[in-house]
Length: 431
Image (cartoon, rainbow, N blue to C red):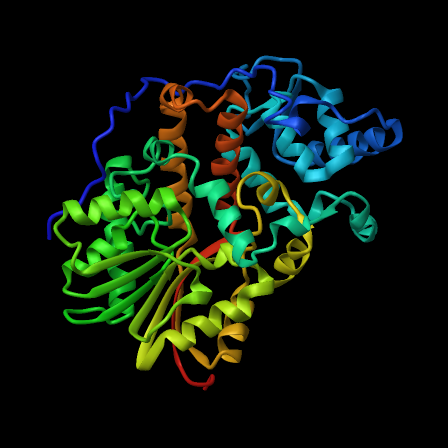
């Protein structure tokens, strides 16, 4: 079947990736980056001692006041501190949120950001001495109530990420505009491999859901429409739901351009308001945006939408159950700046909530290394196209935020702190 590409955009590739040169953060746009925390000497000293001690024990090169790129005999990931006082003040006040905000502010850099973050992710449980784990509530904050995924809150949370700009996402995604893990056949992957790898992922999900000619398919989470296009080309009739107005507009345009508008209905609709029953339900990396409070509603909606004998195919990012429980009540850098209201589930949480809704886990396959490769390619393309991102109106604080987010996510999969899985659910209780 012919590939349906996104509309052409002129995105010049740079010969060498550019570093986002820090500029003074706009205090209206970035209040917690623009201003340093008020001096709290004791907390800053404790942070400097604990973090400094942890960094010295890790396979990293830590430099103070030197230039990124300085020669190192070890070729280990580096962390170059331009403003140690700002770095430790932020961590002393806000822990890992402060660590990310310090990067956004340009107070530290690394020539191998994903390598550095992979080392930290691998040793994350050892960064703070065990006797001090009980003091965790003193340096982490709880999630703000405004981020709850009520119907109104979910629309706002989706808007804050997915409605940033279709052109922004086109600046680093491949022409399929698929914003989820691809499935590769060889490593290391090249950017040119991404469209086929994304189609391989989509086709595997459609196969798992038994989507064929005549299937009535519900997709929860449209993205920019690539899965709906692939399913419609098989002869399926697709109802696809999204809360993103930007995504819905472009998805409809792409589907219309492919001549498949009579087979795909793109709806601005919350999953809790879905009507009708379907032969199959597919949802790709959408559960992470639901929030733990609403997982029972999500799985109940999946079950209610399924006809007898139907199948649900999910692609979901997962983390360990203990890590999930710690993260659930914590306001993190990701929840503050990237995915408000989101939470990555554990496999156990998925299985238990699915079972409570009357769904049985039939198969469950993980492929974390493929997501690490996908994120690497996105990050490399993003950094190569900084000028395009800047021309779209995104300042250097945003660029550093996005670079940190992509590298942070890549490190999660490289370290196996995170996984990504394709899961098939069918009606019935666990065997």
